[in-house]
Length: 201
Image 1: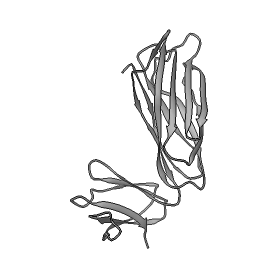
Image 2: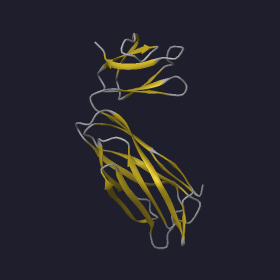
Image 3: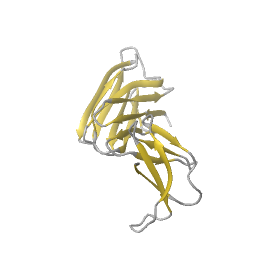
Image 4: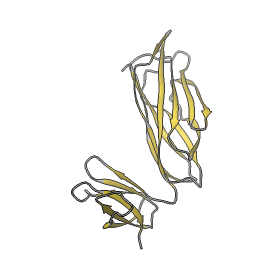
């Protein structure tokens, strides 16, 4: 790839504001970088740029549709975007009535300008907003551990089942009393299992 363009991660409750890091890794003297940002779910809104790196002379972020934005960062006079790190913050708001979701912000059509040449051979990584509404969220990891996202002070019951059917039998696995919005989970029971979470008693 000619350069890398990556977005960070944030965890927020519905109705709160948050921010993701916008990271550029380039060893080329880019004059500008542009991208389309697509949101995978509703609930995240009002995207805006702030905390620009010193080399950035101008920044544009404008909506194309309800779930897509156009971004362009241009180097300042006498500067280039030869940057290894954060180039801006991507701030956002959330709908207070939003459902819980893992909202991906996917960069697409990422291009860099090097003189009169347009570079499109890029490595990019999507950002993610962990948006917590009323319901908790469960995330399974490749090492068979997991993460539980929920409201502090609430106890959640986690259950397992060998089949995801209407008549499937769910077996209690463990209960977790949340002291923070994120709780790492230990390795799940052996075998192929489905997990679900619900408010505990």
